[in-house]
Length: 195
Ligand code: SF4
Image 1 (cartoon, rainbow, N blue to C red):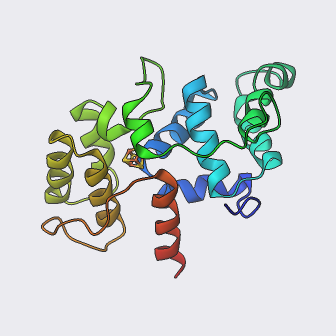
Image 2: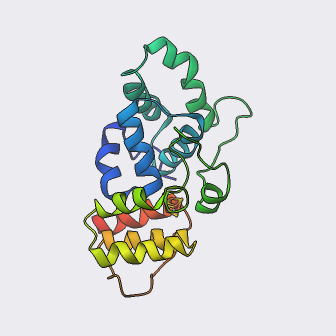
């Protein structure tokens, strides 16, 4: 992990192309509602730690958004503990690692109002179609991703979505590499974009 290489002000830009759909979804939810429930704070907070956001920058990032819906004391009392916890500074002081896809797909399904989980597993068909279509995929591309999703192959669907949004394969070919981890998605994207 490269803690310290990503700062709070870079997240918005990075999220657009290099975040997998699961993390992009939490990011958009945070921007819109200025709040995240526990499951999302954990899934997303650990992902951000994994891409290199330091504890100080994580507190800054969440504080800026949460303060649009609450005062700073409420944020510090209710939420900064959880962020420090993710970084091993509270509770059992474990240096938690970001969740892999299997964990996100199989455990703790989101309830109404939650934004964690895997869109390829937990979104309904129309919402997923709408999200992936808005990323500039062709009609065939959308159909291919939906075909894998309907077959229950979430990580293959995610891989196809990755390849189509990064211009490295077309809808008719087999996926090159199945996505196992949201942070793998991010790193692969950054490598392709930055050479
Ligand atoms: Fe996220 Fe993994 Fe689902 Fe892709 S397959 S959206 S990386 S949980």
